[in-house]
Image (cartoon, rainbow, N blue to C red; front, side, top):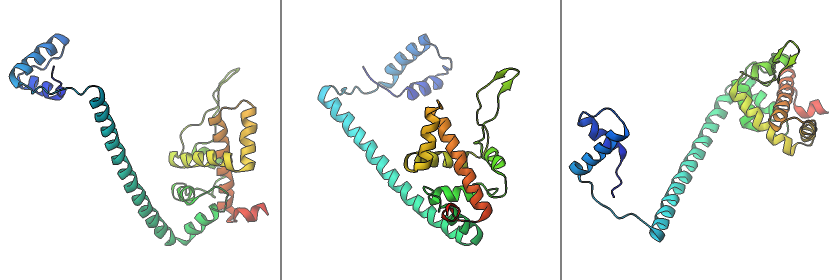
Length: 220
């Protein structure tokens, strides 16, 4: 038995003018390929040899993944530095990024995403900004039927950043964690509860951008 690359057989068939493909045609084509190409017979790894081959191949894959991740981390660091430099050239945006980071749990990545991808932040009402980002559920009613409210559309990059932030906040922020638990006890699905927290986080940051007041000052 010989294992060959199926693409080689397919290209061989096309070169012979065989373009159709059925089981019967494939069987004849494989036989013809074996006769004409005479592919070399190689031993098939079995038992311990097969195990060692698989383990070495898997290790090679993991080493390649580690190298790729290290390169990605270095590239991310370089991009962060470039973004920070560009923001410093715009004092207003730079100030807003700093103000947003006064909210517990908000890192530079989320703050930059909000400032860059959501320039409307601070210029719309809480309902308008929630609808724009896509964290406001839309009604699906018809007559006496009340359908499940669902979110749709909006700024995907901002919504993703807020959703991930909401997952983090529900674990480490006592106030938002309590809101999450209350929603879960009320029968809300985890995803719906996270969206509700994401919307609350958005409206809080919208108020900070509107008033240009740090979070600690608002709480005080």
